[in-house]
Amino acid sequence: MSYRNNPEAIQALVRPTEVHKDLFISEEIFQLEMEHLFANTWVYVGHASQVPNAGDYFTTTVGDQPVVMVRHNDNSVRVLYNRCPHKGVMVVNDPCGNTGKFFRCPYHAWSFKTDGALLALPLKRGYDPEVFKQTEASQGMAQVENVHNHRGFIFCRLNPEGQSFEEFFGESLSTLDNMVDRSPEGKLEVVGGVLRYMHDCNWKMLVDNQSDTCHPMVAHESSAGTAVRVWNEAPEGTPKPMAVEQFAPFISSYEFFEGMGIRVWENGHGHTGVSDSIHAAYSDIEGYHESMVKAYGEERTKQILGDVRHNTTYFPNIMVKGPIQTLRIFKPLAPNKTLVESWTFRLVGAPDKLLERTLMYNRLINAPTSMVGHDDHEVYERGQHGLHSRGRDWVNVARLYEPSELDRKNEVTNGTNEWQMRNQYRAWANFMTADMQQKEPA
Image (cartoon, rainbow, N blue to C red; front, side, top):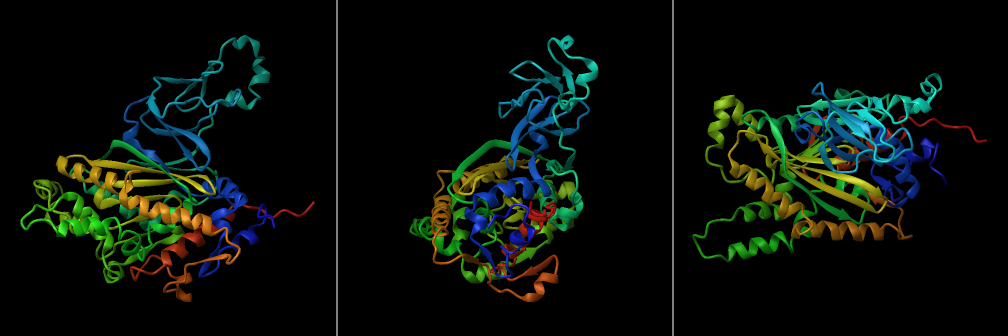
């Protein structure tokens, strides 16, 4: 059965308590995700601090679409499709840099302003003006029209029609707001480069994992559990390393994660860590609380720092950890291949020790050399292979399911509930078919 132009068949892949394995292994479904899901949703592009000056650019992808984020001369951040309208060559090849006042295609030297407008082309006299202005190439590099800057976080929606930014994210933006507010100056900067880690699995497995609180004490027993055991054998009085603080919570009990809570928002967004989290027991950093009180006052500081959310999933493909200032992007490359990018942020005006903790966490947990990361990667890879089995066709997400949840919005639930996973798959089905028209057979 083909899923193309068949929204009913796509919707049928998501049941109230299970999803079909084709979501993870079908090449056709993957291609439809690139065409529809990543075009209908607001997708994270990058952070404004990556392009601080006019002409600064950063190249990335939205789904399978190559784009370039650039600071225009009016100080706005634009997102352009990274394609020359002449012969289709990618105009920008480097991951980042400064292009000056214009982009220049490396093939025939057509040049474009940083908003994509055509600036000049060699031997222009060879083009009849009336004929040329009727061509698509005369319009320059295509600009993504739907771009939104939320406190430095740049998102775009490729499709011209769809939900507004505010409608799509709603109350979930409070996680980004909290991360920014943790800076005494209300400002973040991307620092420390990026860690890239190739995963041999479907991208949705990584998204699913962000609210899976029943796996840490099992999958990470050999890594985090070993680190804690070694620490417990250290001589009495040994200062507790920062690494142990970060490893230890991964093997917390089921009861801890149940009490931690999960908040489920609309459109596939949600977060673990409502009343508690694995980031709640870090040591105080000298001078940080004082700088926050000076900036916000005692009560507001208490509110900001008391919000210790664990993993916030922004559907479709990023996860944010506000208390530790990290952001992970799950970039789909194939049904069984995902590139994970892990970015770290500096709280402007905060002590450097906070950045040290952020960078250490990213290396310990998210790097290709991470012990914890390899636990998950092995499970993902086993899952990707196992889903090809003919023995079963459906993936179960039934834990603590209640039929009434279908009509409830933005609620808090048990920390081991799989409601957030179900929330993501319902959003997947909706945005996969939001712009799909049923076609009559020829």
